[in-house]
Image (cartoon, rainbow, N blue to C red):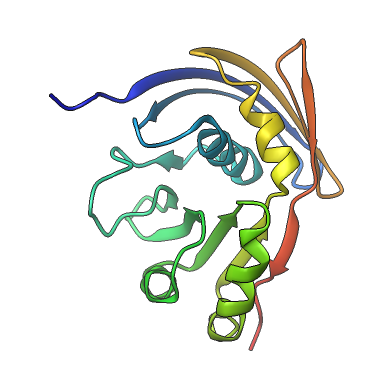
Length: 184
């Protein structure tokens, strides 16, 4: 019998001084059995950094679909923002860049990230609508320590630095921009 996803309820209070976005979000996250707490929190971080009323997580993490894991769509159904996680291959990112106005990749994994980036940087530079972020491993592991089945988190974003707190513990995250959108 297949193991079911763990349902995580999160109350996320966002104060993003960089975008002048201040909002509370009630989120229900499905943690697939193959997904660890670190990856779950990277998804939550990406939500906080891009939060809007139309930003949503897709239904299934392990589905073989052509859907983003996190996306922002217009009222007419066009994908404005497609967000991926991990160390995606160039073929998948090419598909995402062809289907969305903007694509973000949040990569993590400690020492494997520079190796992955060295192997993929040249190929990924041609995608003008792609932005690649690295989340430092120490921050990823610290965020994983905040996970519980029901979470109330405060997220403050200022000058590119993220402060995440559950009221008892807090984590400071400084995402590293590996590739920005280009205007070519």
